[in-house]
Each structure stands twice: as structure tokens, then as C-alpha cells.
Image 1 (cartoon, rainbow, N blue to C red):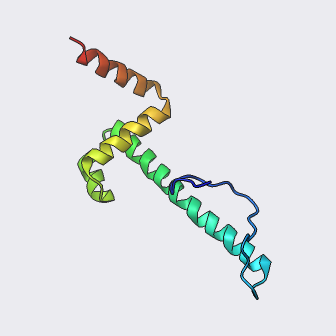
Image 2 (cartoon, helix red, strand yellow):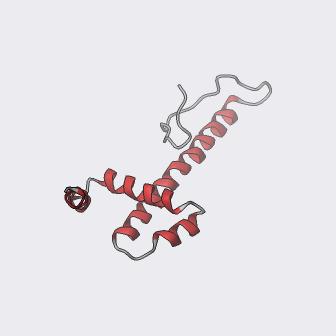
Amino acid sequence: MRHHRHDLLPDEELQPTHPVAHIPIEIQATSLRALRAMHNEIPLGYQRRDGHMAAWALSNSLSREDMAIATGLAKSRVDQIIRESYLASGSGKVDALIAQDAWSDSP
């Protein structure tokens, strides 16, 4: 099964399915596990970055424009990441902000 490149993959005892001749299986298995660990650092890094950006936005301690510059992303993408982080957090503050937006948008 294919996974999105930012999915965390399970920490399991990987074994080569197509072993390379003349290389001990243990060395290949160790390399597979190291590669899996390196892969999992990627989504964890994104989660950490996104969480910090949401916290800084919520505390109004860093502008979204500056976050965009620091990450090399468009401000609209920073806004989207922050919104997604808010929604995923399940925070009461987030629920209140959403309710306030819905109320202010009503006629």
C-alpha cells in the first residue's frame, strides 16, 4: 500500500524483501530501519513546525507574513496551515473563534 510522503510509517522490524546478494541480511535490515526512521522525521518536523506556527498566531507573537518568509511558503499557505492546526487541536478557543466568525458572517 502506498502512503502519502508525509505519513508516519509504523516502527516495525523491517526485513529486506528483495535482498542484495553478497550483503548480509542483518546489514540490509538495519539500513531499512534507519531509512524508515529518517522518513518519519519528515512528518514529525512538519507537525512541529505547524504547531509552533499555530501557537505564534494564536498568541499574536509573530506575523503570518514573517512566518511565510521564514518557511518559504506563500502567506495563504501559512494561513491554511494555521487554520488546519486550529481545527485539529480541538481547542475551545478555536471553537469560539469559529462560532464568532459564523456569527459575524450572518446577516
